[in-house]
Image (cartoon, rainbow, N blue to C red):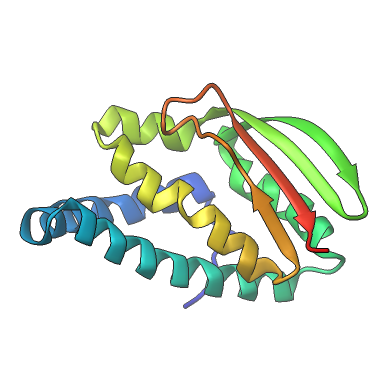
Length: 156
C-alpha cells in the first residue's frame, strides 16, 4: 500500500467513498447496521494505523511535531479550516471549524457513513503515528457539532 501525498487528501477520500459507501450500504442490508459498521470500523482502523505508521516513519521529530506536520496534508485544498490552539513539547491542540469532508458526505446524504470512513479513523491514525500519542476529540462536525476539537498529548 503506497502512501500518496501528491493527491490532496480530500480527493483521495472522495475516490475511496465511491467504493466504500456502496459497500457499507450493502453490508448494512445484508448483516444489519451494527455488525456492518463494526466490521467497517475494524477494517478501516487497521488500514489507518498502518498508513499512519508508514507516514510517521517518513517524518522527523517528536509525535507532537509529526501531528503538526500532518495537519497541512489533511487541510490541503481548503479541506479543513483550523483554529490553532495549545502547542508544547508534549501537547498540541486545534479546532477544525469547517470540514469539507463532512460537507461532501452531507451532500451525498451519507454523513453517518462519512463518520465511519473519515472521522472514526482519527484515533487509530494517532495510535499508528506513535504509540505514545493520545487523542481526545469530544465532537465532530460530521455528527452535527460546531467544530472538531482535536487534543493530542504524549502518554504519561
